Image 1 (tube, helix red, strand yellow):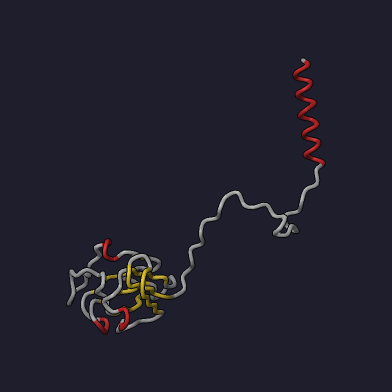
Image 2: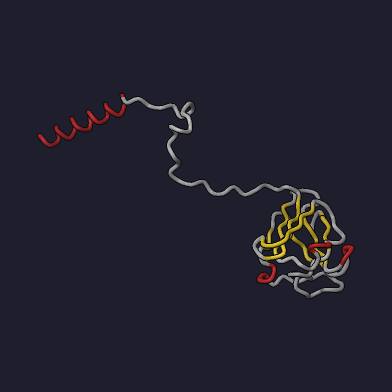
Length: 151
């Protein structure tokens, strides 16, 4: 009985201490008084910005290009791309057709809105549309692209 009474008394005193302790208002606390978060927030994924991104090497390495419209000649990136990302806006003209030839010619492959292929070499993706280049690897073989509603 004594043990139970002592335990109840200790818990009561502890509860009263917690209830009467001053509490900082998190809305007015400055950064110097704010408690550090106990769990790190995940990295924010950038939202769509309307661009098609292409890099010379896998995983965003080396020289890169970006376009927010159709391009008939990739010039500096032509036949040099090993990483690609469609960060276009969802809705109309959200998908990108990647063409084997200049001026939207030859075989093509589709890259849907929001999709990324960070290593085209490892992906093994091949052009499948009719025309020159059909069956060729997409890695280091893209010459032009256009934006389409769906493909």
